[in-house]
Amino acid sequence: MPHNEINIIADIGGTNMRVALIDAQGEIADITIYACAEHESLAFVLTDFMTRHQLMGKTINACLAIACPVDKDLIVMTNLPWQFSQSQLKAQLKLNELVLINDFTAIAHSIPHLGADQKVQIGEGNVIANKPISICGAGTGLGVANLISIDSCWHSLSGEGGHVDFAPVDEQEIAILQFLSKKYARVSSEQLLSGLGIEQIYQALSFVKNGEATMLSAKDIAGKALSGECTLCVETLAQFCRILGSFAGNLALTLGSYGGVYIAGGIVPRFVDFFADSEFRKRFEAKGRLSSFNQPIPTFVVTEEQPGLLGAAAYLDQFMSEKSKANYTNQTTNTTRY
Image 1 (cartoon, rainbow, N blue to C red):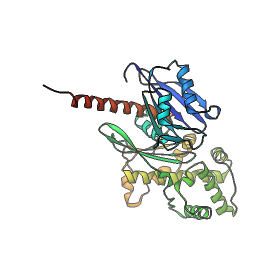
Image 2: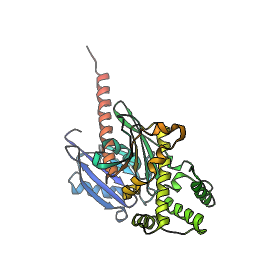
Image 3: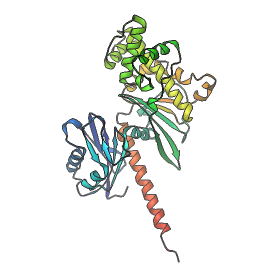
Image 4: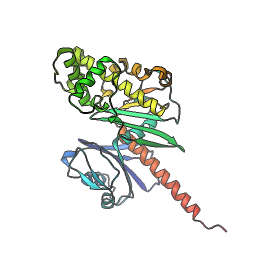
């Protein structure tokens, strides 16, 4: 980054927005948290941040990770009454560069930059450098992304992998599928691997075991499972881990993720010890005659508290480097030689 340019990054969720600077050493600094509902627009928040740090009038590059599609100029946020034009926002704030990425793309780009203290390995396996990486994250929904390395740059392959069909592998999961099939015309993996998914697994198991679909929040299910005060809650969380293991194993089979499979999102990092002791890894490897394919692939839980900001910083750094190389190539190509 040229010395006269300043990089801003942001991770914009439905509740809070985190904005930060990248300092001269390339580290994330001055993280400021804004409650989205208290502000009228994204432009207002960014203007406030820039004013606080006396950045108005300076050359600024910004990368914003946002929880909604970013493929069009008009951005309409899913969980907020905010909408804006990318081009108009760039002009209004007089930004040198404005890059918008999906929030899970940002998390994906954080993965190659995680240190040992920002992740926990589950089971065996070793990372092979520059091999494909898969990421899935259970939270409000089920995010999925993959990273591939091309010419020393990481590229995210994003899609809607969380919405693939749920594929049960034993009688209990078949019973869960049958229960949910009465509620939905089609049952996706997200309907089990999310906050709502934990609640629906609990409802299904209570129906199968007791003949009645009992309601309980995901927070209460997890809390009672971890305290050991509710047997059905323990079984629900254990079933969630098993299903996630099968799902993550399918990602590894599909991409050949010898760079590792990473579990992110807001749910699993809250009970890493329970997760490590669960059948997640057993299910990850249980792929019949292809089990030997998955066995050497390592699996991790992302414990970094700000993976969205870390990924936005990495993405912006790579974006600016690629642009600089392209500009140099164009200048070289257009130079007349005598």
